[in-house]
Structures are given as C-alpha cells and as structure tokens.
Amino acid sequence: MADEKTPLPGWVKAWLVSTAVIQTWDASFIWLRPHTFPGGALDLYWKPYSLYIDVDMRYKDMTDSFVMAVSLLNYVEVVLCLILLYMNSKSSSRTVLATLVVQTMTFWKTVLYLLMYVPPMSDVAMLGTTNWLELVFLFIIPNGLWVLIPGATMWEMWGRVASQGKTSQGKKGK
Image (cartoon, rainbow, N blue to C red; front, side, top):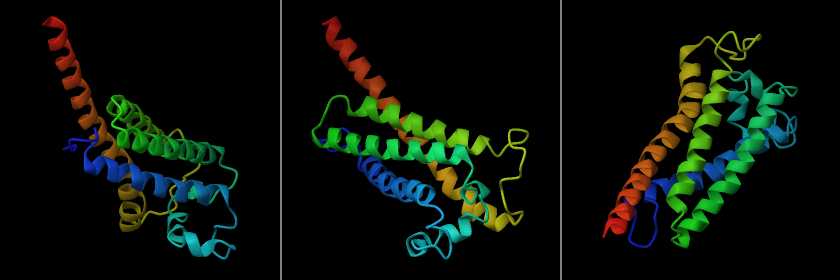
C-alpha cells in the first residue's frame, strides 16, 4: 500500500530502483562489448554474464542488432524509472498512470524479446544450452521476472487508475 505522502507502494518503488540499476548494468554490458566479455578489460564488473552469454547467445553475438535495440530501450526505461521516482517523491497526481504506462512498455519489451526465441522467428538457435537447470536459472527466471513484476505492477496501477476514475465520477455527480 502507498503511504499517505506518495502514490506508489513501497514494493513498486523498490522495483523501479532495482530496474534502474539492473537495466543500466545490463545495457552497458551490451554496449561495452567486447570489453565486458570474459577476459575483457571490464570483465570484473560483469562476471555473471560469463555464464549468461553461453545460454542467451544474443548477448554473445556482437552483430545482433535486435539485442542492441533492446538495450537502448533499457536505457530509456532507466530514465523513465528515475522520472517516475521523482514524480512519486513530489506526490504527482500523474504518477500512477505514468507508472502503468512505463511498466506496460517494460512488460511488452520483455515479451517481444522472449518471443524472438520461439521458432520460426529465429533461424539460428539462440539458446546455447539444452541443460534445463541452466535454462531455468540463467534464462527463464531472470527474464521471467521482467514479465511477472511489471505485470503485477500493471495490475496494481490499473486498479488505482480505475478507483481514481470512480472517485472523480462520484465527485462530478454531486
């Protein structure tokens, strides 16, 4: 539940902060390749990616323009999350609706990314493993969070937008 002073509940604020940090880290991995690859000058800061790039081959492919475009969208998402956090701190009446819009964008960006792994959209098998444990823990769970949490946020924000609409309709009728 949101506190009296700000429109967003604590878990949504925590998600927006986490998203800003993780998406900056993730997009920077893509745009700083090959320096972020194992053995690269910046490898130390992206150690977990040495495992991930062997599962999600798009991250290893420096010519994959789709993953580069998604990473640019990640930077846009970071800026939007920071704007939402600022709006929330100022108790803007537009915070809830703006959060609904941004999280809808995040949700569908991730769904589109995941759909690129569904045949026949991809001519090349971009998942580099058939090991179910690797697939679940290195691909499905991390990417699934970017569908589930924005989906939950959308649900929460939609409920708030709908209740705000009912409140404002009630005021008009009086």
